[in-house]
View 1 (cartoon, protein in one colour):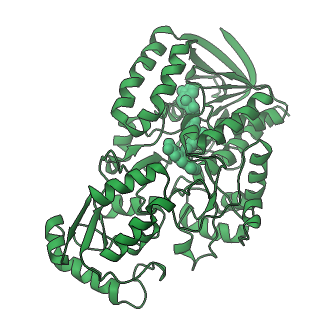
View 2 (view 1 turned 180 degrees about the vertical axis):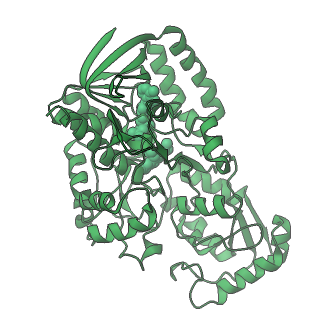
View 3 (view 1 turned 180 degrees about the horizontal axis):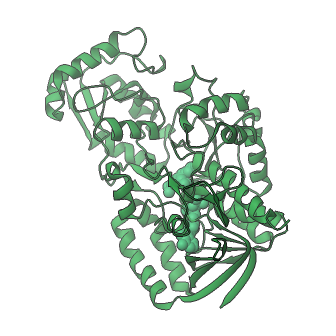
Length: 516
Ligand SMILES: Cc1cc2nc3c(=O)[nH]c(=O)nc-3n(C[C@H](O)[C@H](O)[C@H](O)COP(=O)(O)OP(=O)(O)OC[C@H]3O[C@@H](n4cnc5c(N)ncnc54)[C@H](O)[C@@H]3O)c2cc1C
């Protein structure tokens, strides 16, 4: 079977949907294909989009923000992942991006969260989703995490509204269609995709059934996924899709490709892969087979959230040597990165009885159900307690002398040596003391979720995929977690989806405009 379109988009998650919408906007005929039914990691996500510079939601909530402040803060996180010019453009166009998403039907709200949290409750939708408060010397902080306005984890609604917009635009969607190789001309120009397609309700049903277990109980998920892969192998048929103008790879990352993870991020073996079975690096491999360069494949965001409840920010995070790990009010990905890269994946949160009591009182009001389960597990099963610090250190096999010195410095220093805001830096003096295990290792109730940030190197002007020598591969584009983007150095909640929208729209506009 053979189909034709101007633009072919591989992958129907956030990046693919945005790419398809913008390509269609240029008047191009677009085909959007997906190995499963669409949604990808996007539909499983929290639906948080990082945006600022005075969005409608920020203004309605009375939050002062500017593109300059957003840029100054993000510069410290983004590093060399993208150029100054691109980051500047990302910040300058942030308000417009939110308006565009709202025009596509994605709802947001100005309900401001009063607490520092990893994910706000169903009463709050605008919050500090990064380390802005800890970086207040760099830029005036502002809450920029815009959670899609819907209960539970809002990613499903975020995706659903984009998918509705895609269908309303008349874009042809091919579910159960896997891109297996690119079609290239002799001069290297990419002119289409060879795919395998099947039509099976059972395949779709099993895919949906396996999605959540795959995320939260990986062993069960992998078991449920086996018949899905078997159905694909047994019943799929070849299909050729010709792209007159361009192919856009938006097929997610590689967190579920064990070989790639072992090769590029061996230190992250204790983390919980955040993604679908299709986060197997196939989009990246399609690109490299066509001669593309990759970058930042070693950048994997490992999350270790110690809030909610927010009282736990008053504790101090220590390693096995008894040394302080970092400012505890940093964003969970920054804490995870510090634990993995500098402390052998091991860390404990030291709290006194006053902090513990306050944290327990906050549990009900500050947590969603899944956070409550995690904290219950952590505060009961993974906590050890002792009347003295020495006894506590001995039980956890942590260096007692250094731990005592670390606590003494924390309790007596006029300003926290790690730079933690004074509001959280209160002395820990009330016995009994507790150590809560925050180490990165496989644990069913307190996993350390992780996602990959690197991918194919693209032109920051157009999203066109580049070769190692910097020349573009004609007809080939990439976006979202298949490509290097704004979040490829460091992730903050909302920065991946924001980058998917930004890079997806850019690739769609340029691939669509290529015929003009
Ligand atoms: C539980 C969870 C919570 C998260 N919360 C947030 C959050 O709140 N904010 C945030 O910014 N980020 C969040 N993330 C990360 C974010 O969701 C992802 O990084 C982002 O959605 C990636 O989007 P994408 O479009 O690149 O890929 P995806 O959304 O994964 O879409 C890729 C699509 O490509 C398809 N595909 C793959 N290979 C092929 C192939 N060979 N042929 C055809 N189709 C293929 C897949 O089936 C999939 O549908 C979260 C992730 C998870 C799992």
